[in-house]
Length: 319
Image 1 (cartoon, one colour):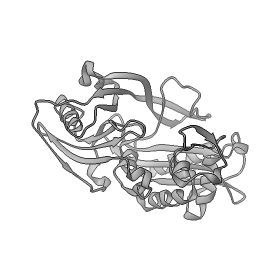
Image 2 (cartoon, helix red, strand yellow):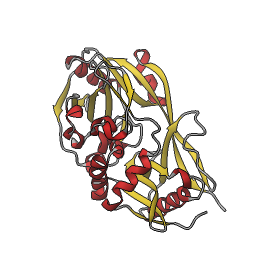
Image 3 (spheres, one colour):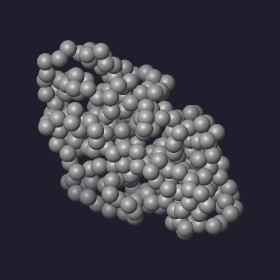
Image 4 (cartoon, one colour):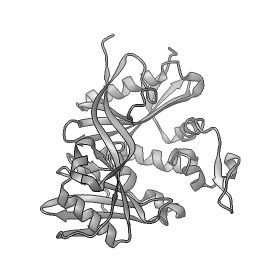
């Protein structure tokens, strides 16, 4: 294990962190004028074309904006340095959700320079996160990973993973329904609104990280993202309030990804309201990630596409 120093990231680390993420991309591609995939140098890509390879860390311009938001309270960015050189990065989000998650930190990213992959920098970052978690008296350090993929995201000793929940992705048709509900635009991005709430639909990372990702309009500064429809709503149905975001899918303009936060789990009434609203907006297919025990609520209209993920708690075993 190499001697390292772990500290909170600063804006001065932006370039180094972006390089860590970009080092994982072997080939840079884009669509040419005829719609064919072509391989090009990184410098030939626009900011948005770089974004498509992995989000805001793919270019320094968007990375600086993202890191600034994290440092303003959206999340916790940490770097591990060796002799003053930034060689590893971890990004986590504090959240408070009903059990089994409770108060927790969610590990969103953990990336290490390829030449230091077996030098203990990932362990140093995880231990630092666990210490911050304990200081805040959070219940878990959580990570999401594709179900059945035992290699992706595997942690070294002395860390162990305890499965807490499984999520499944379903495709469900939008359709009109005989239900009374109210849906109004809701643009307030304050995360305090979802403190202690469930995320019954769309929880691919954590309720807090998903909120920071889809409710803020930061990335609509990119014209290509602004052109994709995104609806941020407050929905009330049968006494249940919820915040619902529907985002038009990139390659299917009549399909939408759905995200939902509510003080209660998903109900048939809320689901019917979302489907009815989406149909009236011109959508025909909704993609929903839901907890495994909620699949029965969706019913036979929900068609699984085979994608599943597990939410696990990271714990430090006795050495």
